[in-house]
Length: 273
Image (cartoon, rainbow, N blue to C red):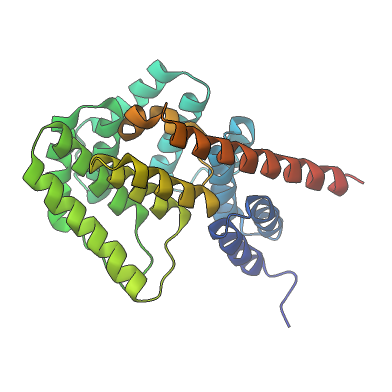
């Protein structure tokens, strides 16, 4: 029988619920895991889920629960940037992004990946390419494990940067590599997650196929993608924002977000009884 006081059990169920788009249930699972002692992992996930939902107050609360000795510098930086974007403090967000582009003594893969992402949102496309070409020889994508979102998003942002710099050969090569990863992944019977469908939608835009992009983005929403606030600051999506099909995606996302918030309010009300 399952141990009702085993925190990892609740945490793993929370992960499953997150993957399946049941975010209200995932929050309950992570909170229970936190109460039972898994304070670091649970607080991180709760902060991320609430950030994705656009609830900055609750996200900051859970970040504050992380022990001071936990090495979460990058996590905290990206969370802080996300919160500034949600609060419509884009100039402050740009200052934080700029910090991630500054050279470091320890020129690690993680730091270069952060630089790719930061320069992408700053729309400094030559700098995106420079950072990506430093890290690309070190990128290893194993088809037999869970798709690594950070790596694939870096590759997607680099493809867009090549596109904006009119380096079509690199665009075609990189997108082919990304799509081959997804093909290999699905052929092995793995499920493409919501965030991966979102990346596929971005690739469709880069390839000049807005109709297919809308299909992919809708698949992302249907499978539980909820990062609504990020669409307005995503450079790749800029020309798609006012398309009727894209507005339909946003409407379906609005419905999903409303349901999640109503479920969370219901759970909070019943817990207080």
